[in-house]
Length: 296
Ligand code: ADP
Image 1 (cartoon, rainbow, N blue to C red):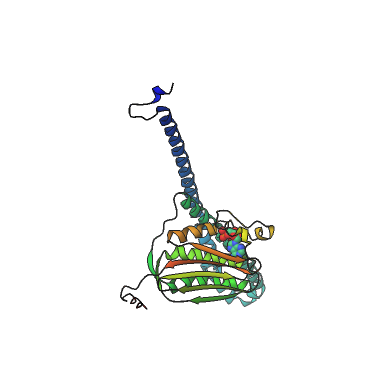
Image 2: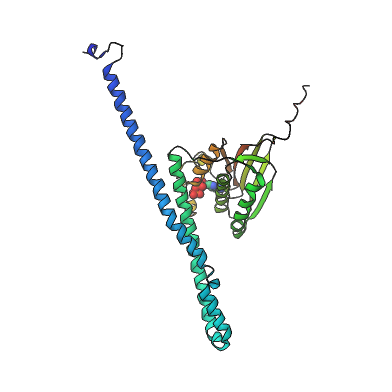
């Protein structure tokens, strides 16, 4: 009998129960999600702390020859040329081997730190998006450190690195925007075997466009929409060998969106790719706005 389920105000009791059950399930799912991303966040922090300590010591150890015991040893050898002739070659070999080991440790440690940072960023996105802190910045102050950081990587692979930039100011989270550019250039290097990589900033009166172009393997048309999905990698064994997590572009897209922009891609397989993002230009408060064009 449905009539006894109808309340005085016309609502139906059975339906109310259904909705509250649905709501409870939804709240439980949200709480579980929050707990998951909190846990990943805490774990990432806990992993980062010891790794940062390890990397600090590795970096210090790379300069072992400047440490007091090494200086004392060198001093003693300088005072005993006879002994030095016998010991120096073994000591040099030891230094060489030690240097190589430390370089490998530093490279692997840096990769691990990058991975942990990506997982931490993903947890933040999961929990409602990355937060950014906007500040006024000059384009040059954003791209010059990025270009300096990435140039050795580009040139080590025998690629030409071109940087073309207009001047201008914008409001941005400088570190996060640099993270996006480092990621785009890193990808460009990874997926390009010959040719060049271009980092450019072009502008209109109101906006600035940052772009990274490469002459690499490109992305098939049917994959273009998917490369921003977390964990997505264009599926082919040739690409899998490049490593990576498939998180970089998802994080970059979130950062650009938090700035009110959109990260876009265009690509031709076998010819290369272009990733670009457009952000509003910070208007110079001292310059009056350009007069409107007279109507014809
Ligand atoms: P990752 O590089 O760690 O795999 P990303 O999210 O940065 O993750 O990129 C996702 C995928 O998009 C890559 O695995 C690759 O298949 C494709 N991709 C990204 N950038 C380029 C590029 N410049 N050229 C060709 N393919 C690319």
